[in-house]
Amino acid sequence: MADKQMSARDQPDPEKGRERETPIKQQLFPESDLSQGIVGWEGQMDSANPQNFPPRKKWGFLGLISAFTVVSPLASSMFSPAVSYMAADFHETDQTIVAFTVSICLLGYTFGPLILAPLSEIYGRRLILSLANWFFVAWQIGCALAPNIAALIVFRLLAGIGGSACITLGAGVIADLFPRDQRGMATAIWGVGPLLGPVAGPIMGGYIGEEIGWRWVYWILLIVGGVMQLGIEILNQETYAPVLIRWKTAKLSKELGRTDLRSAYELPHGDSSPAQQLRQGLVRPILLLLKSPIVFLLSTYMALVYGLLYLFFTTISSVFTTRYGFTTGLSGLAYLGIGVGFMLGLGIVAGTNDRIVVKLTARNGGHFEPEMRMPLMIFFACIIPISFFWYGWTVEKEVHWIAPIIGMMPFGLGMMGVYLPIQTYVIDCYPAYAASANATLTATRSLVGAVLPLAGPAMFEALGHGWGNSLLGFVALVFVPVPIAFTRWGKWIRERYPLTL
Image 1: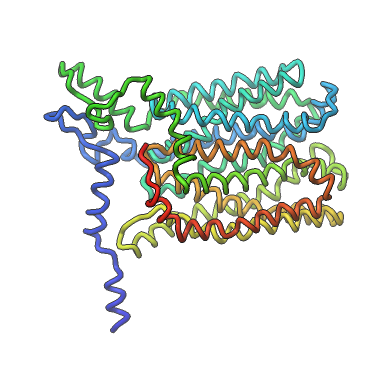
Image 2: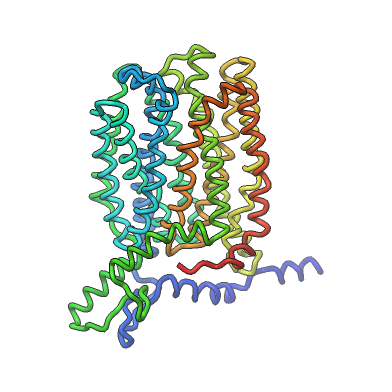
């Protein structure tokens, strides 16, 4: 009897859940009140609201962006196995410069999001995404025709800035289109590109560089990126609610001859000039990083994991060509270990993240908290260090080549289980500014991913692959308690340091 009473008491009250949900929805999707001069949505079920688009249309939009999100990271890593051919062509012997040629793309991913994300929150997702994607495609021509290594570095930097748009704005599109109980799956689909692209790139780039030359890496990226962006250009449309309502306000003002109308997303007497909006938008990612402890901590943790990924990338090709006798093309297949781990992690997160959130929300009386994304991270954080000890010592002792490849799988699995919940968490925390919040994550992790691998060759030369990778494994072990702390105290930190954007 006691168990039955407890069970009944623990069941969430649907009416209370709806009461909590309604004010949140009305705040995010305000309705029109023309008597007060306010233009918004025509009810919460307005078909013009991207949240109410048919499912096929929503997932179609996300699929378009996700497809290009695979192409952009391909450019950052596809060149990696073929870099030795480029170095020979340009007579470059400095291995730090050669490694920087590969990682410079990530510096573009550092600066690009800080500009493109705020611009998308002023001028809309579609325009900024379109311009940035074409910018990325155009600079593939520059890379293919680069006359020297200095020019190639500059052109790859510019291509990285353009290519960062889809990696950054996808978070905004997810917030625009999907309710929170679908964002875990949506983030998993969109997150395929930034993680699988760097793995698939070397597999293809090794054979391309070996068979038809390193410059063809960029010609192929030009063709694939151009065709894909043309499809996006034809099928995509605006999804950012404040921009859509701004357009609606301008149209109604003209049709009704009223000059008093304003968007429900604008402050009643605020300065909404383009210059002011641009100023506020450009500082928003910086504010998120500096004034939100939870965003700062998550950015730091993600940057560490991302940097470890690119440290892997600096050694895989050379290890398997020198120690195991692989050809340049065949060495790209060694990245499959991480790739398989990514796919396993993707499947687990996509299948469980939203379900866990729904279950925890029900237990909490129907009240959702973003920290409900975090418990899944604890398991995956414990898996990440395994790969460094496994991979490092099997390479050091020259165990059969399959052993280090399998040893990379736990890292791929663990990284996906950390990366995706963090992405979804910041979308849930800042749905109106999801692009800027994700820009903070992207910029910090890309900066570390660009700089940290430069220390890789010297570190492994001094310590060897066994102790060098073990050092990285110990660093990963130190950070295992981080998701536990987020799960336990994340809500307190978030509420203790609120941020007005």
